[in-house]
Length: 360
Image (cartoon, rainbow, N blue to C red; front, side, top):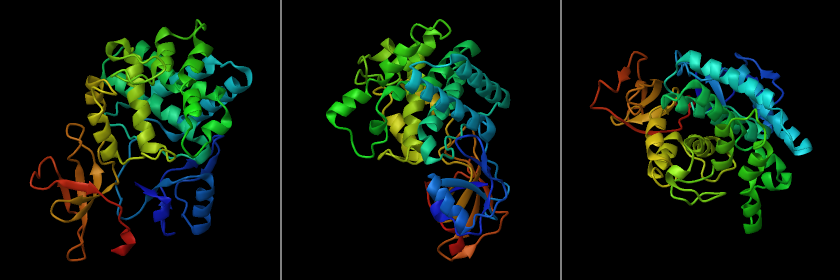
């Protein structure tokens, strides 16, 4: 299994992971051939990437912290609650709490050390998919920081609801594709307070959750909003959510002009440590994010092209790879050419690349 852009689909590929729409209905089953007519429908839905099975990716498993059914259901719930907020200025906290319980149960029982940060999104579910992904990453990071489960749940609730205040902003502002005016930016920056004001008097919502929603755009150097807090004045729960929020935007938000590859996103997080983000938390976060996802095609220092088979949780820059092509001699390599880069220290990954396997 490997993740590819639908721009790379030639029509011979087979879908490796079922696709669901915003209402949880299955759009495409695993095993479907991605013919041109199907690809066109994916374009129309705003899908930009899919998981495929092909000869190159044979035997590769991509481990996700959430199964697609759980993820799809969580996106539905956050959508419904944001719609409720927009229409009635209220939320059903029990619905969100039940959803977080499902997410927690699944993540904590699977014991996966490495977080797959890429997910498949339809264009019309970007906001909801983002909220769920931030929640998943926040659970993983809070757990890695050895916080008790009760605190992990409160942080997860804050992560799932961190953007809920956006439901009270004008829809035309949120759907705008060009840059905000100064007035629009000031209005947009009210969403943490708008979300906090909805939940601040709800006794069912923990103080940790409320603070996570309020402070998730505060920056460690005081340059954030809405209060311009700095350092330890920013609650630890909000520092966790901030890291996960900004990383997901960098990785997955196609409307963001700073959309990055994993390697670039990790470099950004490291570079902003101690300024935008809590450095100690970033240090833990990047230990669970694979630099090169399973199924990625990479260029090795010996000139060969390889596909990443399996990540090493101890050293995420040196996974197990299978070299498949020598561009210099234009030669396909034997499938047995498997290299564990933690043992073969003379070879390293130069960079991740896009490569059309049909050119071999």
